[in-house]
Amino acid sequence: MTWTSGQLRVYGPAESQSAVFGDVCPLLTSLLDGYNICVMAYGQTGSGKSYTMLGPHSDDGPVLPLDPQSDLGIIPRVAEELFRLISENPSRNPKVEVSIVEVYNNDIFDLLAKDSIAAVSGVKREVMTAKDGRTEVALLASEAVGSASKLMELVRGGLQLRAKHPTLVHADSSRSHLIITVTLTTAACSNSTADQACSATLPREQTEAGRAGRAGRSRRASQGASAPQPVPGNPAGCVEQVQARLQLVDLAGSECIGGDAKLLVILCISPSQRHLAQTLQGLGFGIRARQVQRGPARKRPPSSQTEGKRRPD
Ligand SMILES: Nc1ncnc2c1ncn2[C@@H]1O[C@H](COP(=O)(O)OP(=O)(O)OP(=O)(O)O)[C@@H](O)[C@H]1O
Image (cartoon, rainbow, N blue to C red; front, side):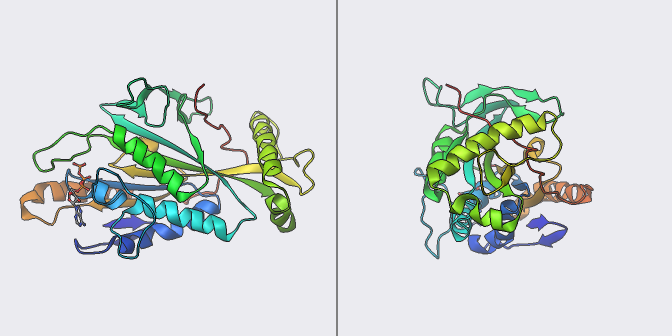
């Protein structure tokens, strides 16, 4: 069962993964337009959250490319579609960065941190509240990715570290919340001509250098300057960076949902009579979640999300 923007759809057990992905696909266009997006799966153990988000369990994890009959889930499909959309509009050429965290027993683990000695689990991190009230995971590692397969390589690495324990109904149960965050950074230009010229006319190295410069600017702008200014030395007139975040959540992690994001909730319920009580509980969550008044999703203004996170040295 999925719902987004007030739209509710029910999918039966035999529905294909690509049919469910049909509800996610339009949100990727919104992501590239600068909206924050959150897709989350919620439901009882063994009801199909990981199957919906990742695909059938395998030791290798989800591997691209997808074939037409593939039963891979939302996350690998998002990876492929996102980079397909980006390749369709190379003038924008956003930088794509990924971070992966696990919430287990109220602790947060960084699944991309390289400073794990034994590499059998993530590195514990602390949540900090910034001056503007936003919560951030301190020292969270993020990696730039240039392709769907690289993105999935990181996801597979993170999954290897995720806590798993058998439950009564599910032998391969994940006992933690998994949150994959994909951050897009795009140069915002003062007009469409500049937009075209922004990265299309520059060699990649210069574009990257420009981005680095703009990132510095953005941080300064967020400390007081009001209107975005052209980036010095950028003839195309590109001003600030727009960041949009996509959060993909396996097992409900409501603390990660930005108040201004477009949200798609996938409620996984068992078709078995045996699990009726759990099913009603899940539906109760669904009803309550639908009643929450969140207001319209807003695009992030340039430079409002510019605090980049880097892998610690
Ligand atoms: N629609 C489906 N079609 C075929 N198999 C499915 C489907 N949904 C779930 N399964 C299978 O059911 C089992 C449990 O699914 P899954 O691991 O996704 O549950 P889960 O909700 O993530 O459980 P947990 O919370 O315990 O981690 C898996 O073997 C999965 O492959």
